[in-house]
Image (cartoon, rainbow, N blue to C red; front, side, top):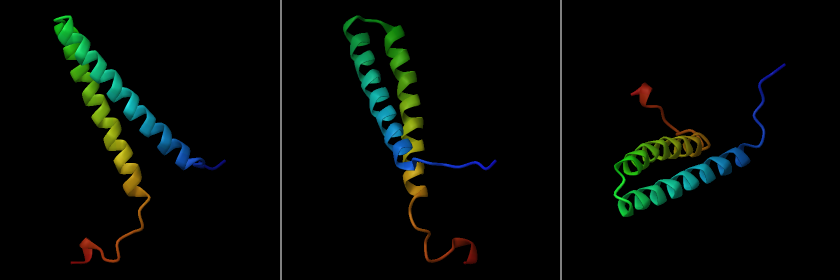
Length: 77
């Protein structure tokens, strides 16, 4: 039984949707924290921002991994 990856474009799309939804939740939570003077909401929004950045980094890494390899290798220098 092999390990197969199907629907790579669907996975990339889902990851992008996750990044955007998490960013939206973070912004709304931060604004809610400001309006309600809630340090707990603001700190949770900051935590969610770090999660959003991690998801964004994963999305960028996935996009880079789909690129064609470079014509030269830095290891050969």
